[in-house]
Image 1 (cartoon, helix red, strand yellow):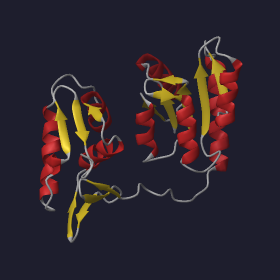
Image 2: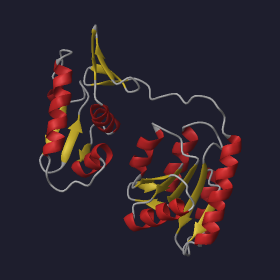
Image 3: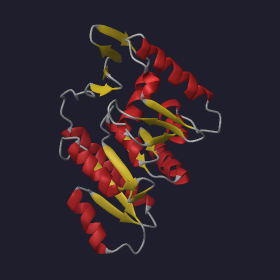
Image 4: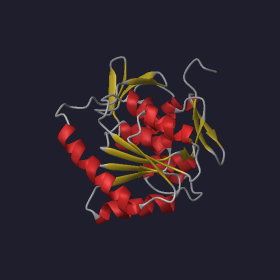
Length: 237
C-alpha cells in the first residue's frame, strides 16, 4: 500500500488517481496525525509525503517511521517546493528519505520510482506478524485496542470500533482540544459540517461503557462549545 500524505485535497486526489491507474492500492492522509493513526494499524510499503504539512513536516514523518521499527521497511518519497535549499534536501536524506523531488513534480519519473520501490518492498518484506497497539490507561480504566476491551479491576466490557477510535484520538492529545473536524475525519471518515449530534451520541455510548465498569467518563472529558473535546487524565487538573 502507498500512503499519500499531504494537506492539499486536490494533490492527494491526483496522486491517488495516478496510483489507481497502475492498479496500486493507496490511502490518503491529510495530516501527520492521520499518518500516526494509520501506522497504528498497518505499515505502508511506500510513503509519498509533502515536506510541509498542516501539523508538521516530512521530518516528523521520517522520524515516526524510524521509531516504528524495521529500518528500510518503508520507502519514503518527499516532495518539496522549487528553490528549496539543498541543505533541507540533504536533511531529508539524512533522516531516511529514499528520494526527494522538487516541484514541479515529474509524474512519469515519480511513477517509475513508485513501481521500483513496490517491487523492492515485495522482495524485502519479512513474514513476521506486526505487534498490535499496546493497552493503555484512560480515565481510570485500561483500554485494550486489539480486542477492543475496557477493563477495570474485575469488570470487563467490549467496546465498538468507533468507541476505541474516540478513546485513542483523545488519549493521544491529552490536555489538548481535539476538534470536531479531526474527530469526524478520523472516526467517521467524513467532513464535519457543523452538526455535532453523531459525536454526542458516540460520546454518550462511550460514557455508558465506562459506567458499566464503575467510572464516570465525563469527569475526564471536557466539551468545548463549537470546538471539540478535551481529555484530562485523572489527577492532571
